[in-house]
Each structure stands twice: as structure tokens, then as C-alpha cells.
Image (cartoon, rainbow, N blue to C red):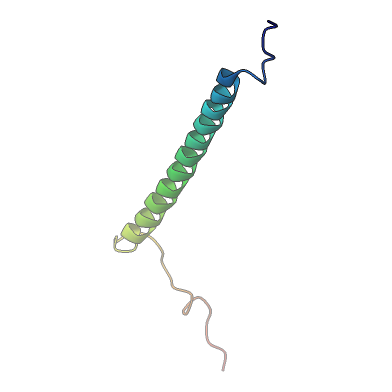
Length: 67
């Protein structure tokens, strides 16, 4: 009886499945990390609005009014 080719072997399909699953898990973790970083940056910007130091002027009073 000849030995089965690698693609015919059931463990080959299982290993492909495991590799694909691991890649999807890594991709999901990277996306989750990106979302968490974006949320943290947004929270930091919001927290900075109530500080006493920061922007000096708003957009409305940046230029003098013309007659």
C-alpha cells in the first residue's frame, strides 16, 4: 500500500485549519488593540479639555472682526 500524499493525509487538513485559526486570532487581537488605543487616545483628549492648561483660543476669537 503506497503512503498517502501530504494533501490526502487528514492531519494535513487539520494543521491547515489550525494555522488559519491562529492567523485569525492574531488578526482579531491586533484589531482589538487598535480599537483600545483609539479609545484611550479619545479619552485622553476628552480629559484634557477640562485642564487649566491647553488651548489658548477657540476658533471663534482667533481673528479680529473686520468693520
